[in-house]
Image (cartoon, rainbow, N blue to C red; front, side):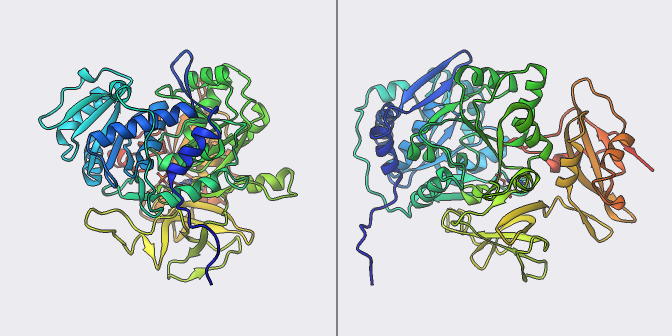
Length: 545
Ligand code: AMP
């Protein structure tokens, strides 16, 4: 028996229409360095219509890929909605990719138009001659004449293009299963892999993001989106903001702790999202120059494990709740969120908040052992996390048809490469990436647990742990430490600091003090580069007896 319900397509154009009308007074603002420039959602809707008209005039139709090479700003937000709403596919390019990777992803996705921020034109100009499918470049917030285009490529000014267009557009009714956007994984091995989100997956994901079990922001919030719009579908924030009517604050290129704090003081956002390295920098900035940031009721943190000491510091010193979440480019990305269960308090609540979080109804999860057997969710058994659901990718994009690689998919489940345990009430605790876990004498040592513990020492600003080859034990942990400003500490003292938190055989003997942990294009620890530095003898290592 079929239902009597209307078969309305879950298209992103419906979100744009809704936000531009019934939430039309909410705003998107971009920090300029000393203030904000602001548009209402009504105006975002008008600019989205102008951009859609302009793109159509440039020959962009359904399914065509439109790239962006931009900071987080109003124009990027407009592109985020206009492109899918008109039936084309948004491809936010990661401006921090290595040149070969950037060229690879733009060519692989077959981007036809790229919208580029003026300040990024010099960088983009180096790549453009190698982008084989790009026919038009649109320069926003800058001078189009500053870009010399190769033969066959036309350069346009965003402002001039839009000024020539009407502020309405007849957004088509698209099939909700059609492509809306794509993102490539920041893959540390091999070529990046493309994930294609649908209108439906983004719609359902946005509902989860704004639900109280998700990030839970609403029309009363101003959401500071520090997470780049090119990282993992912008964590779903643009579409969730349209759906909820939340105001959005964009930091543009002002991503260092000092300007971020200046912006926060001026605008007082109530909600924010960023990876732990950003929050670590903000914390250090607050220590150097105290400032009230209690206007932030919640900051969602994910992309890498959040050290408990950082969560406690924000909570206890600044009255700000860090909300730990886990996800991947492949999972849209919201996979789990660490709200403490109803009724838990004090240390019990903290023990839940430290985890990667509880799976929402839209994410099915299981653990699989080395032998392929499904393990119990008993909070003890450790295995590889596999997930499935309506906003989880079932394949990787290939121009010649979807690729279902058995190393990445298991009978309809996405293999995450993350190792952890799941409690009977659905909380995920990750131990490590399977390739980062340290195998010592047949036992595992979690690099993440060691990092979290070392960074709890007051003299330590950052700590990254890698496994290094060992004749007797196969691998042993090496801790690369970045000291806090002006601090001094000996490796012996740091090891003693860990001694009541780990078994003796887990305590690291190899220590290196470094100026900075190498970071990936999305601000996570780049352990591949750290391993290479170790292998090249570039680290000065102290080995304790
Ligand atoms: P990306 O697609 O670049 O966002 O990377 C996804 C990967 O980041 C996941 O597979 C995890 O290894 C890691 N990750 C994301 N969130 C967390 C978290 N809260 N704790 C630990 N690792 C995380």
